Image (cartoon, rainbow, N blue to C red; front, side):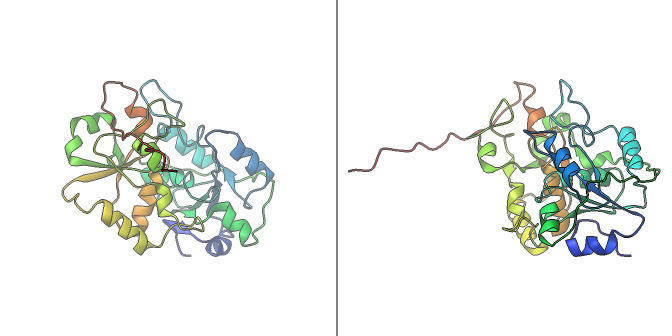
Length: 291
């Protein structure tokens, strides 16, 4: 049976989900309504899917020095994955509302733990429903499995590393352009970006249908933003280390060298007011046109 390691289509999921070693995870989540995703799951989910809550399952509690979504403790994550029936040989498929912005977080976490057979459902539950896929309300009862996490911390970038070696690290920020420029900040208390960072909103890796762009198109985007980065490592960041994982997934599809993940991201960087912040002043509207 084919294994999937980046994305999977609705048709491919339909064919494979009958296999006993496949596990489907629903990760729908809304930042401003943290329980809405679980309620949507209970109202109807892809058959056999378990639910992963971003704040409780895919992150540890916030600390005074951390960003909004610290990495989950590997032992706790291993126990949780095992309780969901995921073993080190399982094929995991994770989905969210559609963009993959949250699903990519679990995709990345499993890769960090040494598990490569994990894929994001392209188009999420929206694509599933559009294709006539059925949903169910029953919470599945899966046999527990053993999952052994082997974290690869070379995939991480810490704030301390960034402070000590900013010149050799190129940060690519996945937030939307208005937040990156500091024109708008609806979530964090400080607007702007890390000086020297570049901006590739994760949404620009999606087509009009909400699916990830083809590999060739993604390659073009990454080549453009990394074109003068020879000899420098690069890392993906965002507001709290979630949508940055979407850039990591997109880079994998594009065949680009993988980034490290700045897990703390902007919400951790601004914990210390002494750290520098860059922002661009919004353009003045200018004088009114002559009557």
